[in-house]
Image (cartoon, rainbow, N blue to C red):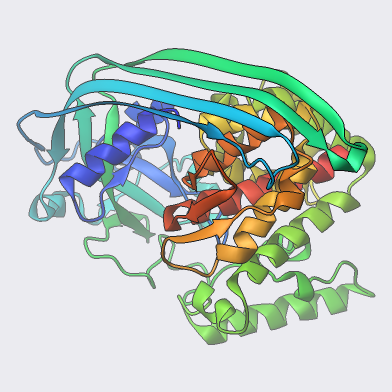
Length: 492
């Protein structure tokens, strides 16, 4: 597994053991999580966590000017150093994969030396900022969040890098041997596949590696900071208090409904309005915080809910014209090799903006502008949120898999692993199904193994046995969703 800036941030959070401390995911956004920066949550799936994304404004920029600002407390510098390497060699299942022999070797090494300091403000000092008037001209992002009833948060504690440093990371994969393929009449395939990469990632002074946040409450043209977490409290409490807002386009597109509840067409406007009102009444009657994953799981298998969610989305994707699907597929392929472009597009869609982007991201935005009622906006956003759960290495491997037409076999393999293990909250051994491994020969097998390994599965290179790890659950679910979407686009 390649070492990343996000992994450093996770290391720091683990060492600090701070309650409610969150690691920063992207180096490109690291300076946008400083104290007082305003954050917004991304669109949520039942099966992978929302992220907190900066909106580009500080709390101090939306409050009335010329007011006192509490003085932050700065901790002493804290050093964090780590280096390590790992090499695995072995044969890949003589009889389990196919009648042949494959040997493989995977190596990783990494090293970093950083120093961070904490900038924070005590809760008592935050009182200075409570119930302050907002600026007269409301920023666009606040209007959009108010309409969509999106909650906003402010960074109250940030851990910043105190001096420039470099992350050194290298990885290699070697695969060689021969495979006999019974399904093709005992044809022998022999070859060798190698990959070696080395990275030097500069991390500049001022980059934030971890942060804490508190929710904002905006009411009557004033802004307050919610000092204690309250799941029932909303940033804009005047918007349908005690319930979740369902916008008409979102309801028709099924963004918040189970696939069996989707109604693709209506006989009349009155019927559509009745469905909107009845859905709103159901959610309102549940009360805040009651519509939860636990309620869904109580009625069936948790994996089945993941399957239903992804099936609903891919069904809607399949209903779009083949031309639209082909445009999205061809645009995503180069974007997978540049996380920042994917992230920028996700931010733009989360913020409800269809601004200007160059390259393939701009092509997708052009499609979204043509007809906003097709549901493409929510589908693209769902896919982007799934892709953002994956590592840079996985995004590159997905691009390779798209080019080599491996998505279908990979999807079925990932599905089989999730079906076996999704319900287990502990580590448990399992066996990869030989019939699903057999079509993935040579380079395809190496690509697939690395995709799974990057999710956190404990892969054994000398046989098809592996170990399920609870931490692999979310990235595996996101990988399954990504493969399902990309395969549908490929089939169009």
